[in-house]
Amino acid sequence: MNDISPLTPAPVLPVLEALDILDIMRMLPHRYPLLMIDRVIDIHTGESATGIKNVSINEHYFAGHFPTKPVMPGVLIIEAMAQTAAVVVIHSMGGSAEGKLVYFMSIDEARFRKPVMPGDQLQLRVKKVQSRRNIWKFRGEGYVGDKLCAEAEFTAMIVDE
View 1: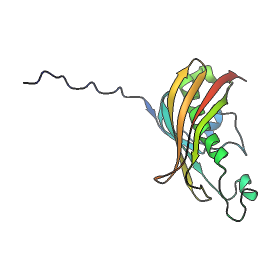
View 2: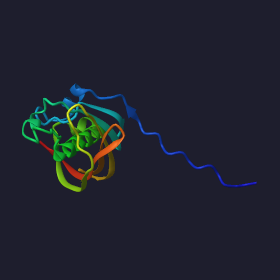
View 3: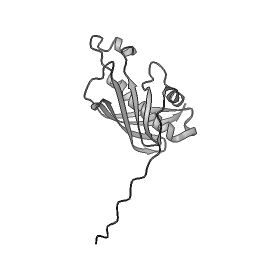
View 4: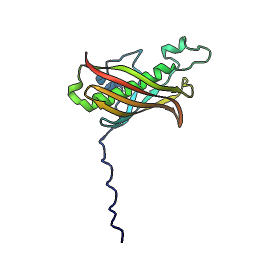
């Protein structure tokens, strides 16, 4: 007989229903033209989430970013990842996050693997790597369907407005 006990299951993290654009606008100070996420789904409090960006030809940057072959700028994909991560941070802090801003401190290991085009739905999957006091580090990946388009690690600081 084997005396090995079964593995302890991982703790179940609370998952929220999707946040719509009005919820996001209450959490983030960003507005047009730099509010880069339309919805946030699969939120695991303080740990991870998936943001959704519906990419439209009407985005202001397509007028000048390769107008004959419009491509979403990679830095804006990373910004969308960071905004998704900011929602995770602000949500996890609850009321204590009101009136605070989240600023980039670093972007590391950024890779752009496939262009994101008008008509695509970009899924921004972010996962916390670590956090200490007001500094959070995340790993982000951007997908269109099942294709990885972009990835990066980024660190941000939460500060009073």
